[in-house]
Image 1 (tube, rainbow over the protein chains, first blue to last red):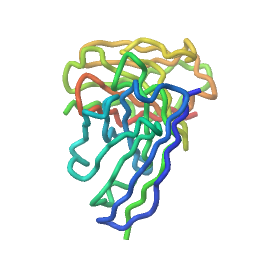
Image 2: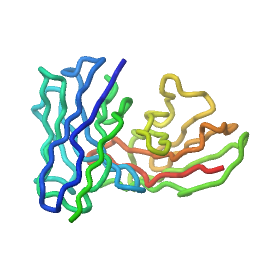
Image 3: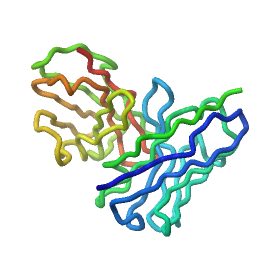
Image 4: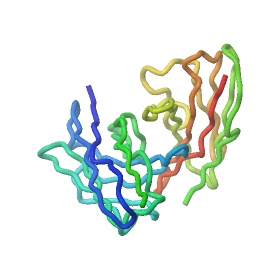
Length: 120
Length: 106
């Protein structure tokens, strides 16, 4: 059974940093690209970042480029999102998401999400 | 960036009704269009991929159609468990973008 378990969400002040983790199980982690998608309270879904299966290629939304870094550890089947320079508008539930084999940009499995709150 | 516009933003319906949600892309997305269902406090769930392909395990009362820039999700014979928010998503190009959502209410 595919499972994605996010952690690391917390309350942080503007300008602060946070690292989110997503531990994957139930599939061959090294064979899939992975992504982060966020959802601000009461709002819609926003794609944040994706990383290739090897980790050699990374992609970001303009809203987070230069502040967020996606990475992965194949040995522990863990996806990360390092966030610096956090802003109030980064407040959201952050989901990690896995694609099916045939696509990098469709998401057939999602984690339960972890809440990041940026506020003074 | 490709903008995805969903309509309506919300709708009221009854059990047994048929409902249609529309998603308009700002440019041709080559049918690279997915639909997700989200219930309160839960992660989104993939319903339909590549415009009209039903994800495994999704009931056949859900269907998708469209081409070019205009796409629709139809739920025939609404069931109580279908009351949720629905999102379209294009994957023709980065950045991946979602529609604003359509809340289907009783």
